[in-house]
Image 1: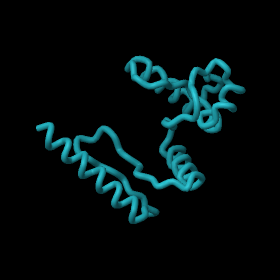
Image 2 (image 1 turned 135 degrees about the horizontal axis):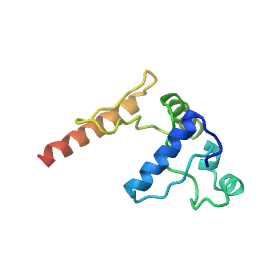
Image 3 (image 1 turned 180 degrees about the vertical axis):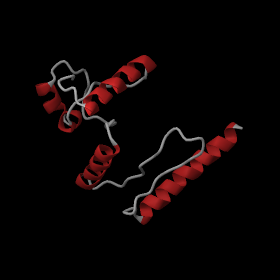
Image 4 (image 1 turned 90 degrees about the horizontal axis):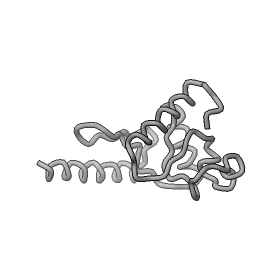
Length: 124
């Protein structure tokens, strides 16, 4: 919420501004710590003016390192299966698999890439 002028915090403020300008159809808020994003009680204690409800279901992180750390911590802490990471904005379906990818992740990402490729073909 603007308490730091570090490069990563400034980047997050730029994201907030872009989302406002894009008129996205989902709720979002400014930069905050991960625990506040995922825990409504902590968020309301620290930032009572936040209008978000519940836990965030989308995290935008300032660097690839931060994203990788958060992704792997959340995946491990929640014992979840991952379907990503997913690369958005490419002309063709492209997805990245890390060396730790399980067979299940390879199958999931293959299914996603095939579905996206079919969608692209159907658009022609």
